[in-house]
Image 1 (cartoon, rainbow, N blue to C red):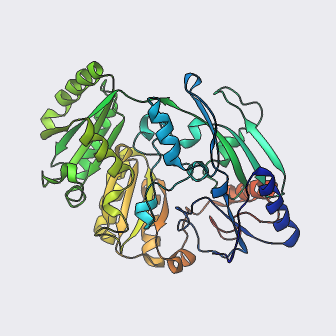
Image 2: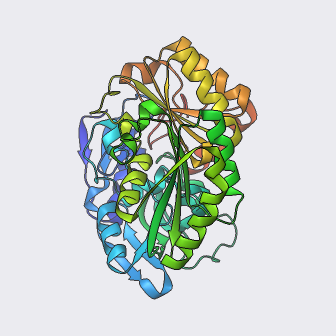
Image 3: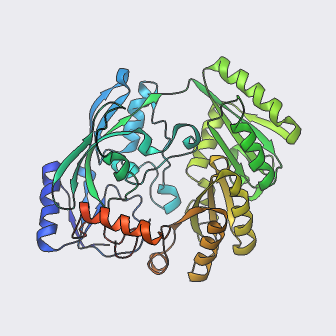
Length: 409
């Protein structure tokens, strides 16, 4: 954490703040509303660069499916604006607030892109970086630059938007961003299969993704998790959920295709539009593991792997670490709530993930734990060397969020 707060009012003041830090050998924490402050290594900074003053949509052309906004613009404001025009952010960014014990709906556009967030629709629409068209930013050298533009095919040379997405503010301070928006589906429904074990659910999700049903969400909720989500709690069984979105006639047709495919596997159920949206919001935000819920004392890991290996990882973590599991992305995203995380537990998680293939991030844990164990997936030597060279190219003096992702970087 840091003691001083710098709150620039525009991009020019951001550049001044970074130059001040460079000249004085200071380290800056880069933050919007701080909803993801508790993710990453626990580190010390000399000052916080608070971007919440850089707020407001600067361009929105619904017909062109493009929107530009300052980095500190609340995501809720952008979602309300696009919804009024029957559009949306197709990458469906999750809200880390409830999981980390902060207010829901407080994320900013800059934070969402810096963390490359996405939700259940990732399997169909991609992550935030796939919708990131352009950026204005200030490097750790105190130099303002821009990349990309306002159309999809706008890249010549290096695509810096892709590089900055997921860099967690360690390369540059983004001041204004341009993203692609898409039409919002007219309606949606969810097909449920009850009582599947994790492995059977993985096979069912793989079959659904390979079918003509064109699902935009596939998740598996073991019984203990399903009981804490109102829309499926009544069944008192594990629930495997499949979302279908689009115009109403198409949804009806594809739902029938999916139900015919899944009927031999177990008891089916369904949710209409309102309940379906509520269910997928809960899955997106990992509501059963939220900080104010029954699992608030447990540490939460986020594991990305090949979808058909998800059940293997989940089963191993449940048996060896006492973890509770939630599967998203057809099994490719495994959320694990673990009773405790120390060096031994972290090593167990990483060894389990490495054996199946994938990477793990410690999302929720006390600062003391995050200071003692690797939070982000440790990098192989060659990749770590490349990461260090890229970091030095943008921020040679380590001014921006130093050591947030990896020690010494």
